[in-house]
Image (cartoon, rainbow, N blue to C red; front, top):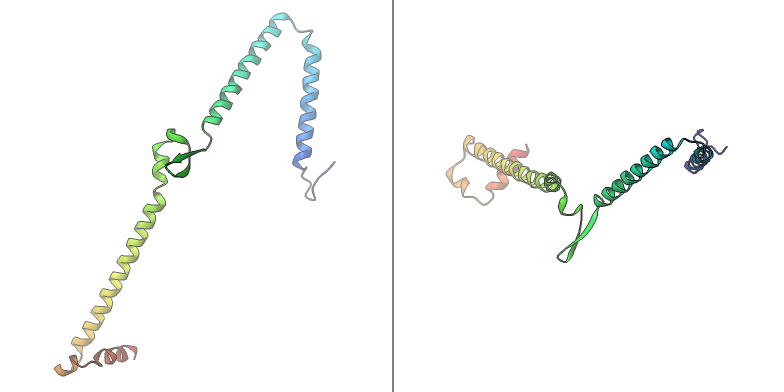
Length: 150
């Protein structure tokens, strides 16, 4: 028996064993099919037809819900066609909404930091005792930055 190093059978082995089991079951059923009473054979035939109809409809619905590539002008879009739910279309906008909210939050925090820096400079100006001529001096900003570093 082919097993991997962890004791788990390979998928190809499992598929082959399942196929052999299915063939043995089918052969056994075929052997005894001729000995079945007519009413049982008729019911089995009807059940088989019903199962085939259900399988066909399931395959048809499965292909209908598959991903569809459609042309939208000069671009291609991936989607489920025009019958996709509205909430699915709206959730595709969620990353854009989060991006815009994040950028707005960053802008607000930058604005708040600028206000705090201006308030700190104003506080240091108003709390110091400087002559009025110092406010007009071009090196005054250097004086403020040196004072804030200390």
